[in-house]
Length: 113
Image (cartoon, rainbow, N blue to C red; front, side, top):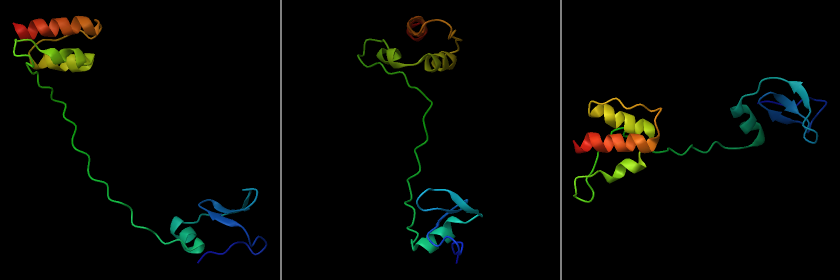
């Protein structure tokens, strides 16, 4: 068990050593583990909650004909990078230096041909 310096009984333990409780001044530099600090302060370690694993992000975009009229309405919501990837899936290389509006128009031509 750790003990504060004999000349500073009200010092608080930190990971970097003992600090003055009022001023925060480092009184004695030493490495203390978090487990030792918790034991000194009388804290019991609560088990860490187990977070569910995040679902893998899908990078695949599926074009849908929402209206049934043969056009793809979701192209407007795609970013330039997503439009470029979709173009590559269809064998076309889009130039991201163009505006997103232009890329959407080019993708519409590619998908409707």
